[in-house]
Image (cartoon, rainbow, N blue to C red; front, side):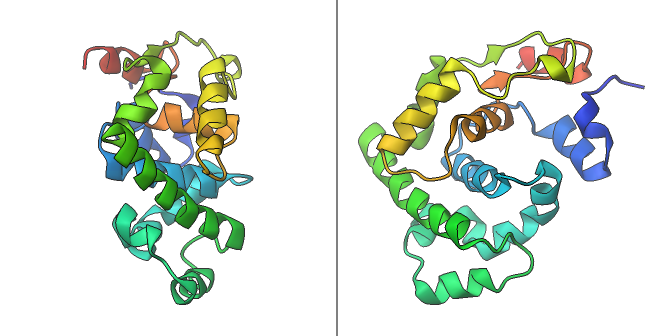
Length: 189
């Protein structure tokens, strides 16, 4: 039996996400946008709740096609607000649209969102060596800087804790516990 991070042992979906995605470096702009929307939707909720709704989010948000999301109108917002498969929070839905527009502006300025976002860790995943989940911080100076910069660019729902969760999800940091089999595996990539 391989050792795994404690948080991943509650449901098969969480375990699969932990074993295959969490902490894997992401350089695909569509997937980076997906995580940005999902992390924002998570605010005040559990990641498990969002993970259970992820496929619904993909369908509801045109598989996170940033151009399409940026052009959502009041009819689409109404449709999303009545969709039981996602978190029906007007602020979060509007933030996804606002963030899509800001995301495109970043792509235009930097060539890709990937190029922009990875600068906060100098393009290389930070490998941490946590022994317990209590050791893992909720935010860091890097997530503070990312949050501040994203907010200045007009992004919403990008507080430092959300930014740190984004960094963890997209492999900008390796926060698997040292005893977790994924900690070592991800260092070999």
